[in-house]
Image (cartoon, rainbow, N blue to C red; front, side, top):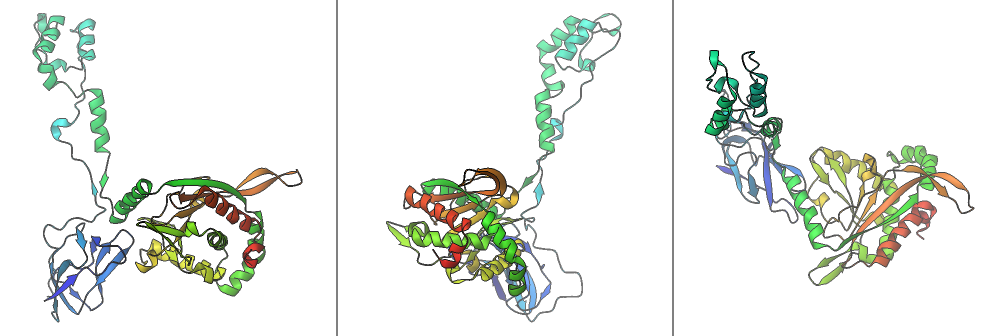
Length: 413
């Protein structure tokens, strides 16, 4: 028998969740054929069959957490599956991690609609008492003539306590039951759990502050409009805004290296390289693939890498290496219409830049005139433990200046 084990998951990742078995017990597989999907805090990855054979045993069910080296199942090499239908998955395997689970409501909790008695033989005063107390008139013993319910009957019924068990659930309780019946519970994915944990850790560990500025995007938009067709024809990729922001950011990081550093124990580690993480929203959650050595890449290379990362991130096909080693992060909430936000640090990094939507606003120009200009708010969050306010504010000003005068990016000034 050959064991199917959890492979090395990547830098600082020791645990994964079994997201989905692609094969069942008794099914034949080919060597290197994907047989199970694992979900980590960074990516979804496939575990391939180590050899040709038949899966004879599944040890871990979907939704279970596993560590590196754990046994997922067993494979009998060289075996061939029977022609009969393959047996189902191991009994007791959990449902897919995204299976919806609704809260069951016991039958005795089900709200019973009470129709107060409007029997003409019942006086208006008695009917009011019944309605006010949400009572079932048919449950009240009647002592009046011809089976009428009297006020005394209602009082005695209330005093006996019988109404507590036989009357309907109070309106508030009915509402709560109704609300629960319309809720659904979905198990958090491994990625979402880790995103939640790390964002909270960032708030708890870093002395995080945010500084704001605004940039006139007119010059970049004009330059992009003038050269976008030539750029795409030559390089085979569209000229976007992100390459401008990355190049402008690198200039700022070179001048203020503390923002490209991190704390390790009692030391500050200054990174003399520029691996920029670009936040990408996917159906599974936010991921941050890293473009390495951005200072050595052309704008065309940066744009091509961003397009490739975006597509593979949405398909869940980024590798662990591509998600690690970032020194600074850029996130663009503007694509969703965000006007301003305070981005949270991608620890252990010391800085993150938030881009936002471009919106025309009236601006006073140098000559005193007023023009409607395409403006964007910028937000840079930073770790105040190693980045002073002067460095944080000045670096954001450098980014603003480079974007408002794009020639600076070409001249590196």
